[in-house]
Length: 391
Image (cartoon, rainbow, N blue to C red):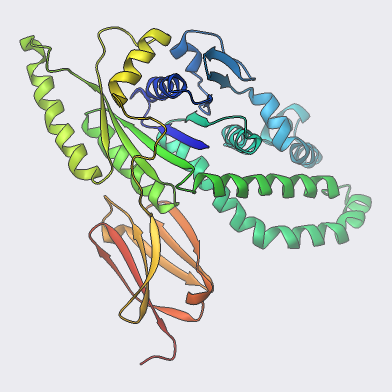
């Protein structure tokens, strides 16, 4: 089974590229489903049909879904939301307002991602294609499982034990609604799902991120940052799709400037994203809406290639022995060394790049070692460990 996620800056055409890729995969015989995790769904507009909260047939071998937010929230957050609502109401907040406030920001989109886990585990599909939200939101959601797992491992056991002891006292004396076993069970189930999602999404033999880019400076800059942060969190990017290229056949002098500009930015994309493969999608003669135009676009992008294949194999980080030292290396393109900071705490290594942070759990071989030095060479952060007893 393959999981392919498309993201990019808002307005670059990622939904159109995702839809045309899904249709191309279905044409090649893969049983395919395409999902939208963007709160502003546009898959229906792209296919020019109505999609809803359940998988709906679009074409032979292809189904589509725009998930129902209220249904998704109730499935993954309902019990916890009930307790938070009760707590906020006890604090004097209006019940309707408390019910709204009890939904953690980003939970709607994250719960949509959890749909993917259930579809993957069902084994009903050959390919799951995801039309993600714009890059900033997508990065936040993809980092959420790892961040929440970190808090879960440290805070949840204490919180559960404390709640079991203090629940009768707090509820009888102060009237505070303490979480019951049902709430803690819901939390455990939620985080099991989060861990499962993270495992699936970071397996390079299963999942690929694909960046959709236009030949424009601001779009390319954002794509560079996205590529860096995807590497930081261990997500594999196997393809960049450069969209809306003016074809050479267009010979109107009006477009000469734009063609020169696009040529310059195309060279920039090829240089800065190397060795990731780059495919191009032309500016089509008609609006790309409906299966006929989406099929044409998919064929133009992939030619005779299989859109489901893994276009690039590479590891965001790896650990190897060099000259008697263990070296952990992490690919962080487009970043200056001044933007990177490290913090070691036991078996954890925290790497911060700008406002994004990743906690890497070190393997046992490195637990008794200390960080000797960290260097930033050829787009990779290289951290060398040495034995604490060495000279």
